[in-house]
Image 1 (spheres, rainbow, N blue to C red):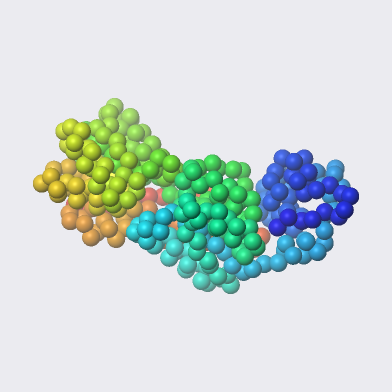
Image 2 (image 1 turned 180 degrees about the vertical axis):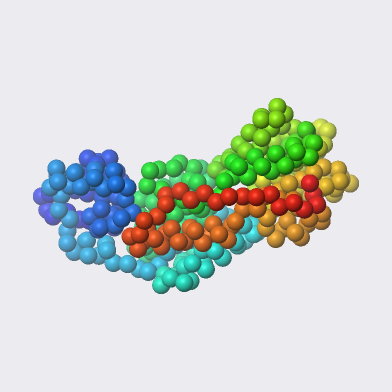
Length: 337
Protein backbone atom coordinates (compact mmCIF):
# COMPACT_ATOMS: atom_id res chain seq x y z
CA UNK A 1 0.00 0.00 0.00
CA UNK A 2 1.25 3.53 -0.75
CA UNK A 3 2.55 5.36 2.30
CA UNK A 4 1.19 8.92 2.43
CA UNK A 5 3.90 11.49 3.24
CA UNK A 6 3.58 14.25 5.77
CA UNK A 7 2.40 17.43 4.03
CA UNK A 8 5.30 19.40 2.58
CA UNK A 9 7.74 16.48 2.34
CA UNK A 10 8.81 14.46 -0.68
CA UNK A 11 6.38 11.92 -2.15
CA UNK A 12 6.92 8.17 -2.34
CA UNK A 13 7.11 8.53 -6.14
CA UNK A 14 9.98 11.01 -5.79
CA UNK A 15 11.84 8.65 -3.47
CA UNK A 16 11.33 5.77 -5.92
CA UNK A 17 12.55 7.89 -8.85
CA UNK A 18 15.62 9.07 -6.94
CA UNK A 19 16.47 5.49 -5.88
CA UNK A 20 15.68 3.99 -9.31
CA UNK A 21 13.23 1.44 -7.88
CA UNK A 22 9.47 0.87 -7.85
CA UNK A 23 7.03 2.48 -5.40
CA UNK A 24 6.41 -0.92 -3.81
CA UNK A 25 10.13 -1.36 -3.10
CA UNK A 26 10.15 1.96 -1.23
CA UNK A 27 7.05 0.85 0.68
CA UNK A 28 8.70 -2.43 1.66
CA UNK A 29 11.83 -0.69 2.91
CA UNK A 30 9.81 1.78 5.00
CA UNK A 31 7.78 -1.07 6.49
CA UNK A 32 10.88 -3.08 7.39
CA UNK A 33 10.37 -5.91 4.88
CA UNK A 34 13.41 -8.03 4.03
CA UNK A 35 12.06 -8.84 0.54
CA UNK A 36 14.41 -6.22 -0.94
CA UNK A 37 17.89 -6.65 -2.37
CA UNK A 38 20.78 -5.07 -0.44
CA UNK A 39 21.49 -2.70 -3.34
CA UNK A 40 17.86 -1.54 -3.50
CA UNK A 41 17.74 -1.17 0.29
CA UNK A 42 20.80 1.09 0.27
CA UNK A 43 19.48 3.16 -2.67
CA UNK A 44 16.11 3.71 -1.00
CA UNK A 45 17.62 4.64 2.36
CA UNK A 46 19.94 7.12 0.65
CA UNK A 47 17.04 8.66 -1.29
CA UNK A 48 14.94 8.93 1.89
CA UNK A 49 17.79 10.76 3.63
CA UNK A 50 18.45 13.07 0.69
CA UNK A 51 14.78 13.96 0.18
CA UNK A 52 13.90 13.90 3.91
CA UNK A 53 10.92 11.67 3.19
CA UNK A 54 8.69 11.01 6.22
CA UNK A 55 5.91 8.39 5.89
CA UNK A 56 2.55 8.98 7.46
CA UNK A 57 2.43 6.92 10.65
CA UNK A 58 -1.21 5.88 10.25
CA UNK A 59 -0.67 4.71 6.70
CA UNK A 60 2.40 2.80 7.82
CA UNK A 61 0.41 1.01 10.50
CA UNK A 62 -2.26 0.07 7.99
CA UNK A 63 0.30 -1.11 5.45
CA UNK A 64 1.98 -3.44 7.93
CA UNK A 65 -1.22 -5.27 8.84
CA UNK A 66 -1.13 -8.86 7.63
CA UNK A 67 -4.06 -10.74 6.14
CA UNK A 68 -2.55 -14.23 6.66
CA UNK A 69 -3.71 -15.06 3.13
CA UNK A 70 -1.80 -15.69 -0.09
CA UNK A 71 -3.05 -15.83 -3.67
CA UNK A 72 -2.32 -18.59 -6.15
CA UNK A 73 -2.60 -16.92 -9.56
CA UNK A 74 -3.14 -19.11 -12.64
CA UNK A 75 -2.96 -16.93 -15.81
CA UNK A 76 -4.61 -19.58 -18.00
CA UNK A 77 -7.97 -20.34 -19.49
CA UNK A 78 -10.12 -22.45 -17.16
CA UNK A 79 -10.23 -25.45 -19.48
CA UNK A 80 -6.44 -25.54 -19.74
CA UNK A 81 -6.00 -25.35 -15.98
CA UNK A 82 -8.41 -28.20 -15.27
CA UNK A 83 -7.28 -30.26 -18.27
CA UNK A 84 -3.55 -30.35 -17.57
CA UNK A 85 -2.33 -32.73 -14.81
CA UNK A 86 0.78 -30.57 -14.37
CA UNK A 87 -1.31 -27.96 -12.57
CA UNK A 88 -2.85 -30.56 -10.28
CA UNK A 89 0.60 -31.60 -9.04
CA UNK A 90 1.77 -28.01 -8.60
CA UNK A 91 -1.34 -27.04 -6.63
CA UNK A 92 -1.09 -30.18 -4.49
CA UNK A 93 2.49 -29.32 -3.54
CA UNK A 94 1.62 -25.72 -2.73
CA UNK A 95 -1.41 -26.82 -0.74
CA UNK A 96 0.64 -29.22 1.40
CA UNK A 97 3.00 -26.48 2.58
CA UNK A 98 0.39 -23.73 2.97
CA UNK A 99 -1.86 -26.15 4.84
CA UNK A 100 0.86 -26.65 7.46
CA UNK A 101 1.21 -22.88 7.97
CA UNK A 102 -1.21 -20.36 9.46
CA UNK A 103 -1.95 -18.92 6.00
CA UNK A 104 -4.92 -19.64 3.78
CA UNK A 105 -4.70 -19.80 0.00
CA UNK A 106 -7.03 -18.07 -2.47
CA UNK A 107 -6.87 -19.31 -6.06
CA UNK A 108 -7.39 -16.93 -9.00
CA UNK A 109 -7.70 -18.32 -12.52
CA UNK A 110 -6.80 -15.13 -14.37
CA UNK A 111 -7.49 -15.66 -18.07
CA UNK A 112 -7.06 -12.75 -20.50
CA UNK A 113 -10.43 -11.17 -19.67
CA UNK A 114 -9.94 -11.64 -15.92
CA UNK A 115 -6.46 -10.17 -15.50
CA UNK A 116 -7.72 -6.67 -14.63
CA UNK A 117 -10.07 -8.09 -12.00
CA UNK A 118 -7.29 -10.24 -10.53
CA UNK A 119 -4.94 -7.27 -10.38
CA UNK A 120 -7.56 -5.12 -8.66
CA UNK A 121 -8.13 -7.86 -6.09
CA UNK A 122 -4.42 -8.22 -5.36
CA UNK A 123 -4.00 -4.47 -5.10
CA UNK A 124 -6.88 -4.28 -2.64
CA UNK A 125 -4.82 -5.56 0.30
CA UNK A 126 -6.60 -8.92 0.56
CA UNK A 127 -3.42 -11.00 0.49
CA UNK A 128 0.14 -10.74 1.80
CA UNK A 129 1.79 -12.39 -1.19
CA UNK A 130 1.18 -14.35 -4.38
CA UNK A 131 2.36 -17.45 -6.21
CA UNK A 132 2.11 -17.37 -10.00
CA UNK A 133 1.94 -20.93 -11.33
CA UNK A 134 2.16 -20.24 -15.06
CA UNK A 135 2.87 -17.27 -17.26
CA UNK A 136 3.25 -16.09 -20.84
CA UNK A 137 5.25 -13.20 -22.25
CA UNK A 138 1.94 -11.42 -22.88
CA UNK A 139 1.00 -11.52 -19.16
CA UNK A 140 2.23 -7.98 -18.50
CA UNK A 141 -0.18 -7.53 -15.60
CA UNK A 142 2.05 -9.88 -13.58
CA UNK A 143 4.77 -7.22 -13.48
CA UNK A 144 2.28 -4.95 -11.76
CA UNK A 145 1.38 -7.70 -9.28
CA UNK A 146 5.04 -7.94 -8.26
CA UNK A 147 4.98 -4.20 -7.54
CA UNK A 148 2.15 -4.69 -5.03
CA UNK A 149 2.97 -7.85 -3.05
CA UNK A 150 5.87 -10.31 -2.85
CA UNK A 151 5.58 -12.86 -5.66
CA UNK A 152 7.09 -16.28 -6.30
CA UNK A 153 6.89 -17.55 -9.86
CA UNK A 154 6.51 -21.17 -10.91
CA UNK A 155 9.06 -21.24 -13.71
CA UNK A 156 11.50 -18.59 -14.85
CA UNK A 157 9.67 -15.35 -15.62
CA UNK A 158 9.77 -14.14 -19.22
CA UNK A 159 11.45 -10.96 -17.97
CA UNK A 160 13.57 -11.72 -14.92
CA UNK A 161 14.09 -8.72 -12.63
CA UNK A 162 16.70 -8.43 -9.90
CA UNK A 163 14.14 -8.84 -7.09
CA UNK A 164 12.23 -11.76 -8.64
CA UNK A 165 11.89 -15.12 -6.91
CA UNK A 166 11.15 -18.25 -8.93
CA UNK A 167 11.24 -22.04 -8.73
CA UNK A 168 11.82 -23.88 -11.99
CA UNK A 169 12.97 -27.19 -13.39
CA UNK A 170 15.99 -27.36 -15.69
CA UNK A 171 13.96 -27.26 -18.89
CA UNK A 172 16.95 -26.76 -21.18
CA UNK A 173 18.68 -29.80 -19.75
CA UNK A 174 15.41 -31.76 -19.85
CA UNK A 175 15.01 -31.08 -23.55
CA UNK A 176 18.66 -31.89 -24.16
CA UNK A 177 18.65 -35.25 -22.34
CA UNK A 178 15.37 -36.27 -24.00
CA UNK A 179 16.88 -35.65 -27.42
CA UNK A 180 20.20 -37.23 -26.46
CA UNK A 181 18.25 -40.31 -25.37
CA UNK A 182 16.79 -40.61 -28.88
CA UNK A 183 20.17 -40.00 -30.51
CA UNK A 184 21.78 -42.69 -28.34
CA UNK A 185 19.30 -45.20 -29.78
CA UNK A 186 20.46 -44.49 -33.29
CA UNK A 187 17.73 -42.08 -34.40
CA UNK A 188 18.82 -39.30 -36.75
CA UNK A 189 15.55 -37.97 -38.19
CA UNK A 190 14.25 -36.42 -35.00
CA UNK A 191 11.46 -33.87 -34.75
CA UNK A 192 9.79 -32.08 -31.87
CA UNK A 193 6.37 -30.85 -30.84
CA UNK A 194 7.05 -27.81 -28.68
CA UNK A 195 4.89 -25.81 -26.31
CA UNK A 196 3.81 -22.25 -27.19
CA UNK A 197 6.88 -20.09 -27.71
CA UNK A 198 5.55 -17.28 -25.54
CA UNK A 199 6.28 -19.45 -22.49
CA UNK A 200 9.81 -19.74 -21.07
CA UNK A 201 9.43 -23.48 -20.37
CA UNK A 202 8.61 -24.17 -24.02
CA UNK A 203 11.43 -21.94 -25.24
CA UNK A 204 13.93 -23.68 -22.95
CA UNK A 205 12.86 -27.22 -23.89
CA UNK A 206 13.15 -26.35 -27.56
CA UNK A 207 16.60 -24.89 -26.89
CA UNK A 208 17.66 -28.16 -25.23
CA UNK A 209 16.38 -30.09 -28.28
CA UNK A 210 18.38 -27.86 -30.63
CA UNK A 211 21.48 -28.05 -28.45
CA UNK A 212 21.53 -31.87 -28.42
CA UNK A 213 21.03 -32.10 -32.19
CA UNK A 214 23.66 -29.44 -32.79
CA UNK A 215 26.21 -31.32 -30.67
CA UNK A 216 25.53 -34.42 -32.80
CA UNK A 217 25.65 -32.54 -36.11
CA UNK A 218 22.03 -33.42 -36.87
CA UNK A 219 19.37 -31.10 -38.33
CA UNK A 220 15.81 -31.10 -36.87
CA UNK A 221 13.42 -33.22 -38.94
CA UNK A 222 10.40 -31.15 -37.86
CA UNK A 223 9.44 -28.45 -35.34
CA UNK A 224 5.77 -27.80 -34.63
CA UNK A 225 4.01 -25.87 -31.86
CA UNK A 226 1.51 -28.02 -29.95
CA UNK A 227 0.36 -25.31 -27.48
CA UNK A 228 0.88 -27.61 -24.45
CA UNK A 229 -2.60 -29.09 -25.07
CA UNK A 230 -3.83 -32.49 -26.22
CA UNK A 231 -5.61 -31.03 -29.24
CA UNK A 232 -2.55 -28.95 -30.06
CA UNK A 233 -0.38 -32.07 -29.97
CA UNK A 234 -2.74 -33.89 -32.34
CA UNK A 235 -2.78 -30.98 -34.78
CA UNK A 236 1.00 -30.62 -34.66
CA UNK A 237 1.42 -34.35 -35.32
CA UNK A 238 -0.96 -34.10 -38.27
CA UNK A 239 1.10 -31.25 -39.74
CA UNK A 240 4.28 -33.31 -39.37
CA UNK A 241 2.63 -36.25 -41.13
CA UNK A 242 1.38 -34.02 -43.96
CA UNK A 243 4.74 -32.30 -44.46
CA UNK A 244 6.70 -35.33 -45.58
CA UNK A 245 8.37 -38.53 -44.43
CA UNK A 246 7.64 -39.55 -40.85
CA UNK A 247 10.56 -38.76 -38.52
CA UNK A 248 12.27 -41.69 -36.84
CA UNK A 249 11.67 -40.15 -33.44
CA UNK A 250 9.91 -37.26 -31.71
CA UNK A 251 10.56 -35.26 -28.57
CA UNK A 252 7.15 -34.02 -27.44
CA UNK A 253 7.49 -31.28 -24.82
CA UNK A 254 4.57 -32.41 -22.63
CA UNK A 255 2.81 -35.69 -21.92
CA UNK A 256 -0.53 -34.12 -22.75
CA UNK A 257 0.65 -33.18 -26.24
CA UNK A 258 2.07 -36.68 -26.61
CA UNK A 259 -1.39 -38.13 -26.00
CA UNK A 260 -2.69 -35.99 -28.85
CA UNK A 261 0.20 -37.11 -31.05
CA UNK A 262 -0.62 -40.76 -30.30
CA UNK A 263 -4.19 -40.18 -31.49
CA UNK A 264 -3.06 -38.51 -34.72
CA UNK A 265 -0.70 -41.41 -35.43
CA UNK A 266 -3.46 -43.97 -34.85
CA UNK A 267 -5.69 -42.10 -37.30
CA UNK A 268 -3.07 -42.85 -39.97
CA UNK A 269 -2.62 -46.49 -38.95
CA UNK A 270 0.67 -45.73 -37.20
CA UNK A 271 1.79 -46.46 -33.65
CA UNK A 272 4.13 -44.73 -31.26
CA UNK A 273 7.04 -46.97 -30.30
CA UNK A 274 6.62 -49.10 -33.43
CA UNK A 275 6.63 -46.62 -36.33
CA UNK A 276 8.13 -43.63 -34.51
CA UNK A 277 9.87 -43.38 -31.15
CA UNK A 278 8.23 -40.84 -28.86
CA UNK A 279 9.51 -39.30 -25.65
CA UNK A 280 7.39 -36.88 -23.63
CA UNK A 281 7.94 -34.46 -20.76
CA UNK A 282 6.30 -34.36 -17.29
CA UNK A 283 5.92 -37.98 -16.13
CA UNK A 284 2.31 -37.23 -15.32
CA UNK A 285 -0.44 -39.84 -14.94
CA UNK A 286 -0.96 -39.48 -18.70
CA UNK A 287 2.37 -41.18 -19.41
CA UNK A 288 1.45 -44.45 -17.70
CA UNK A 289 -2.13 -44.47 -19.04
CA UNK A 290 -1.01 -44.37 -22.68
CA UNK A 291 -0.41 -47.55 -24.69
CA UNK A 292 2.39 -48.07 -25.27
CA UNK A 293 3.42 -46.47 -21.98
CA UNK A 294 5.22 -43.21 -22.65
CA UNK A 295 8.94 -42.78 -22.14
CA UNK A 296 9.19 -39.29 -20.68
CA UNK A 297 11.26 -36.72 -18.82
CA UNK A 298 10.19 -36.48 -15.20
CA UNK A 299 9.86 -33.01 -13.75
CA UNK A 300 9.18 -32.97 -9.99
CA UNK A 301 5.99 -30.90 -10.14
CA UNK A 302 4.84 -31.75 -6.62
CA UNK A 303 8.24 -30.77 -5.24
CA UNK A 304 8.21 -27.61 -7.31
CA UNK A 305 4.89 -26.60 -5.77
CA UNK A 306 6.24 -27.26 -2.27
CA UNK A 307 9.31 -25.14 -2.94
CA UNK A 308 7.24 -22.27 -4.35
CA UNK A 309 5.12 -22.12 -1.22
CA UNK A 310 8.13 -22.46 1.09
CA UNK A 311 9.98 -19.61 -0.61
CA UNK A 312 6.98 -17.28 -0.33
CA UNK A 313 6.44 -18.15 3.34
CA UNK A 314 10.13 -17.47 4.01
CA UNK A 315 9.85 -14.06 2.33
CA UNK A 316 6.75 -13.16 4.33
CA UNK A 317 8.42 -14.24 7.56
CA UNK A 318 11.53 -12.18 6.83
CA UNK A 319 13.73 -15.26 6.44
CA UNK A 320 16.43 -15.55 3.74
CA UNK A 321 15.14 -17.09 0.50
CA UNK A 322 16.85 -18.08 -2.75
CA UNK A 323 15.87 -15.93 -5.70
CA UNK A 324 16.24 -18.84 -8.16
CA UNK A 325 15.65 -22.51 -7.32
CA UNK A 326 16.27 -24.95 -10.19
CA UNK A 327 15.17 -28.57 -9.81
CA UNK A 328 16.62 -31.48 -11.83
CA UNK A 329 14.87 -33.67 -14.38
CA UNK A 330 15.42 -37.30 -15.39
CA UNK A 331 14.40 -39.66 -18.19
CA UNK A 332 11.88 -42.34 -17.24
CA UNK A 333 12.18 -45.20 -19.71
CA UNK A 334 9.05 -47.06 -20.77
CA UNK A 335 7.86 -48.52 -24.07
CA UNK A 336 7.44 -45.69 -26.57
CA UNK A 337 11.13 -44.98 -27.23
